[in-house]
Image 1 (cartoon, protein in one colour):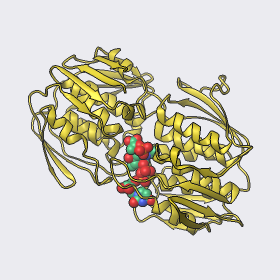
Image 2 (image 1 turned 180 degrees about the horizontal axis):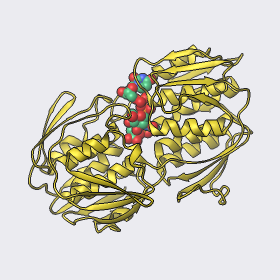
Image 3 (image 1 turned 90 degrees about the vertical axis):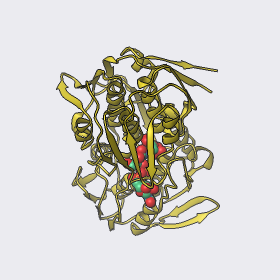
Image 4 (image 1 turned 180 degrees about the vertical axis):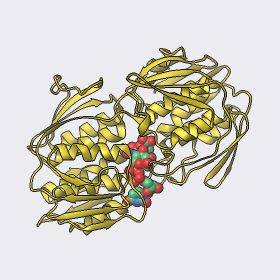
Length: 428
Ligand SMILES: CC(=O)N[C@H]1[C@@H](OP(=O)(O)OP(=O)(O)OC[C@H]2O[C@@H](n3ccc(=O)[nH]c3=O)[C@H](O)[C@@H]2O)O[C@H](CO)[C@@H](O)[C@@H]1O
Ligand SMILES: C=C(OP(=O)(O)O)C(=O)O
């Protein structure tokens, strides 16, 4: 198993190109199931999650060309260009072995059901950050006319006469349920209204791709989406939006060393209120040609609460905790989305951070210096928080279970070394 070794204390300064967003790329790949035509996606990040989803789609019968249409890249895009063709779907079962590796696999359910009238998808199960049920996905699909049973850990869904439009009011915001319902409603008969829908840039990216495929969607970017179902969607070409979570993670990595970084391809307007939280912590941002420049001379304590977009993203909570661990003063960090997303706290404490947990809030009292230590990554964003802490710490940090990091950060060591970090991957 690979490890990452970091010798901290080097001030970062450089330029990094941000990749396409994992959390946009995954639903976009699932959208290929909605048509018998070719969907070409560019700016896909080279990540373990993309490979896992590609395997799932291939076992359904999707023909996948990893060197798809190189002539289509999209402006400023540098990732993979992949063509997906779901003309010959052989089976509508998503097996446990693949689904358990990645929760986003549940996003094949809506498209398969809408296009083929049946699907059998393994329940993803719990994971390190929380139980993560899929009840909103299932209830929403039932409102669109699906019959759903649970059988031996599988969701068995059918809609022999097709799905129909309905009003679905989500009791709270769910990114995945919004995406599943959006895709299903695109091929349902009649009008669907999704109320209290997620507004994350990745949901907007999916909606824009669906429109390019012929879907009729109003209210994109708002919390109410109105979808007029169509009989058939066609192929399209779409460039995956830049990864806002990678963007802010790298900004924080530089800030932890009181350094600076220019992030090419980054979208400041997609950071929502995270920008204000980072500014409150002493960071400064400037739009520059082709991206955003971020610098930090002095870090100060700041209070943060995670919320759906445009609130502060839960996917940045672990990283900001590592950052604020060496700020002047105290910070209160509250996690309101996932019930168990503080697994990084004991690891950060092993590096000298001063953190007190009270239920869903963590009181972080800034220390002058953290110290390197062997630490264990428990989930994707927790891994990044340990890397950020390692860059700030004195001495060597050895991050173990790097496969979590590889789910969502492409060539992280290379990107950070290019800015002066002393970081290397140790493959065993
Ligand atoms: C692949 C992807 O895009 N993953 C992101 C997506 O996950 P995901 O789509 O799984 O997250 P949701 O927005 O659905 O989850 C929000 C909250 O709702 C709960 N919930 C969700 C669905 C449901 O049917 N029932 C239910 O109770 C979840 O347990 C969680 O507490 O959004 C999360 C919240 O921004 C991010 O942290 C993940 O990185
Ligand atoms: C939690 C995340 O991803 P997933 O929903 O795929 O587990 C994440 O990207 O931080």
